Length: 307
Figure 1: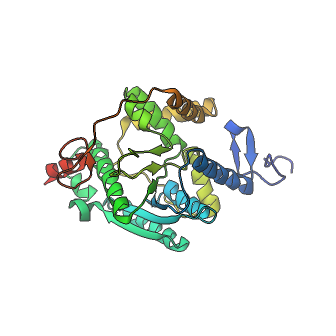
Figure 2: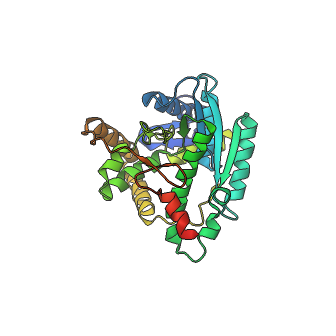
Figure 3: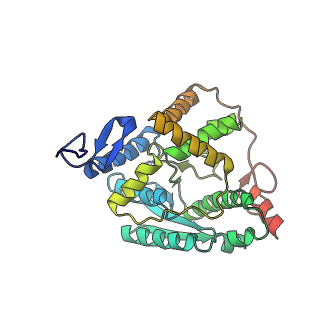
């Protein structure tokens, strides 16, 4: 036993050191730790109710694949109906392998799986959208299309909640970015359960992984044998997020627990913040019927530009 690093809870060899928790964990205790935080987050924000039909945004990446497995496990003790929803943006060499993983994992767990593509719904793949455009335009198109299509798919399937794989890194970055952009109203709408819940046109989105760091999700996937691809989208260009990500990682290295403290501070502030005044009733897009603040939604406006 000399010279090794051992689990803080048993005599087994440790697979990870968690500086923010001042502990080392073996495979068994680490996996249990991740699973307990997932379930605790679901309870803390009252994310799910017995018998609900829950959609899982499944890209085939590490976060969504781990989420799929954790939701499947949860459904054994909390009766839920699950459907996995994959959005195929149409990015050659990047999306096909992950769509294959998504399909295989859903089939393995016996979860219904539906795939929707930009090309079939909007008439354009991301590859065709990006022809002749600067790379920084990609996220503007892709983000709007993906959110629009996920909401549309959920309503078609009768989904009551949409679970997405946003992890602690994602949410702590988003909190800081909204502060830096001076977008307090957007920040107040953000949280464990997001979306305009009171409007029937929007399907609420839940984030059961929001208290689990990105690297721990990756390690959990490896330890559990969940197939994943560690590959960045070739069109990824979000200068601010990449900068915030790098700075947060540096802060976490120097001051373990920084990401948790950012999230917890935000949640405490949200509790005492004055609620925003009620907005005027949302309209519905004259072209696609989805909720919007104007006559034509952002998605349909982008499609018009491409036509």
